[in-house]
Length: 278
Image (cartoon, rainbow, N blue to C red; front, side, top):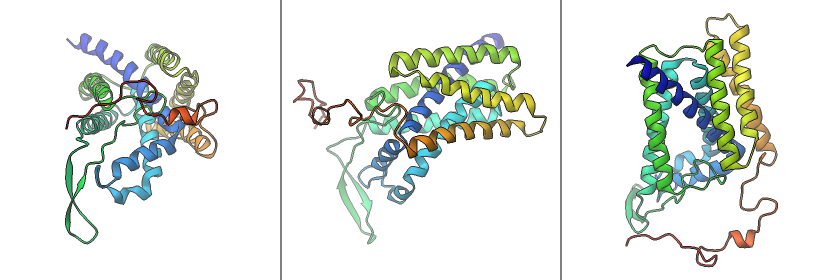
């Protein structure tokens, strides 16, 4: 039984760890775009969290770095219980958020308390896409929800194994196996879905940073130092993309894109548009 759990956990760590890093990188690549998506959720007609709007960019960067950090921690086996709990909490929240997005009624209304303290009824403001993979892989709300459900299933054995003490910092042999698998998953996903090779290098750089600290440090808190090394690497890339253009520009107004065509409706493009039940 435990051997089967160990095998499933190893597979889950490869998949979840790699996808967390890639997902975090895609958001980090265009953190401003992710910020705009968060601001859609903060609108009164959506989740009515306007007080968070001034902190949109900071929250966007925090989520990007946190997702990358958790992905690397899953792969290296650092702080297994804390990592498993935080990963589960993040996945439960995003699964709920994508469900909320998918089930939003664009013809419905909601009641909010306005600035004067009065209760007013306003139209729902539905967010059509959750922005999980940004403009790189546009997913409908239902597709995002199903993706999160599948990921949540893979997170479950990681959580169980962590609390059974079956996950520890990797041995060199374990690292070779897990990292090779994660890099392969990243390569297949990046080339097949993103047409972008950088995620493989990005994952490798973060793993190298974490491993360098693990092998050289004898500090009792070296797992936190490993986390700091990953934050430095991912933070540098985040700073670069915020002060320059995205490393890979998936935005509809990127070089080579037609703004006029990208502004057309589904009907104008001869495509089937979204349908809503009245």
